[in-house]
Amino acid sequence: MGTWQAAELTAVLSAAGASVEPEGSAGAEKLAVTGLSSDRIAALAFENGILLNELKTRAASLEDASMELTADSIEYMTLMLVAGSMGALTVISEHSSGLIRTTLAAVPARSAVVLAKAVVTALLWTAVGTAAAIGSFLVSQAILDGHGAAVPITHPDVLRPLVPSALLAPVCAVTGLGLAVLRRHAAATLLTSAFTLLMLPTMFSESNRWSADIKHTTVSAAWTRLVQTWKLDPGTLGYTATLPGSWIVYALWPLTAVALAVAVVRHRDV
Image 1 (tube, rainbow, N blue to C red):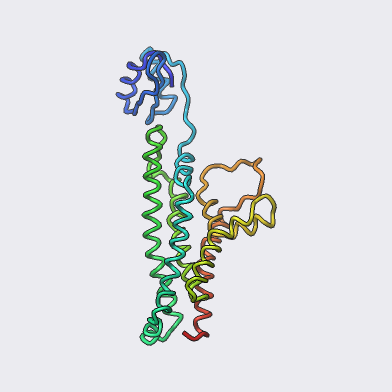
Image 2 (cartoon, one colour):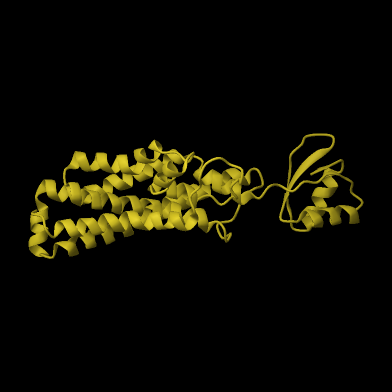
């Protein structure tokens, strides 16, 4: 907002519990106010005889927070690659060292071994993903707080981008584990994991229906849709994935990978 009586208005708004920061240096100074509605600010200014030259409400900061949270998607692409590779290595390392024979001697039920590894991997990478998502959110809020647009983590809509971001790591890790059981060869598995999780989505666009349908079945495309908390432009070109469909994709990738791994391991030699 703008006013010629910045000092007086700052005192009045601060006394009412608002947080006030100057955005100008001289003349008709501008103030950034958080903690009070625009109607309340106008009423307080009127009651105290303070003239406002300008009063604007900032755009909803939740969109800013979500965009800051996911702005550097390279970090999340790196997380996908690392999680998928580490999930695969939990199986590949046992095969390459021969420890898989010892494991199966102790637990002859092969499917139980695969399922146990999948559960442990999912729990471990859920913790890692949660820490990464919350850390990214807190960093974004530190940036947005300087512009008076921060959103508390307790905001009811903050969970929407945080949850899929936290689950991205376990989804990729369990998928990598399943691929490792199917392929068993280290180089082939890591290449397949990287191609499936990162490279495949870039081969398709949302400009036409068939290409968009394929793209929307990938993990990265599902994550991108799930973290979008702002309203999509109805006039935008392209086909957009649905939220329920994106959650289904999130669930199907690890579940399908593990199901195939369990089916294969029952009928294949170590």
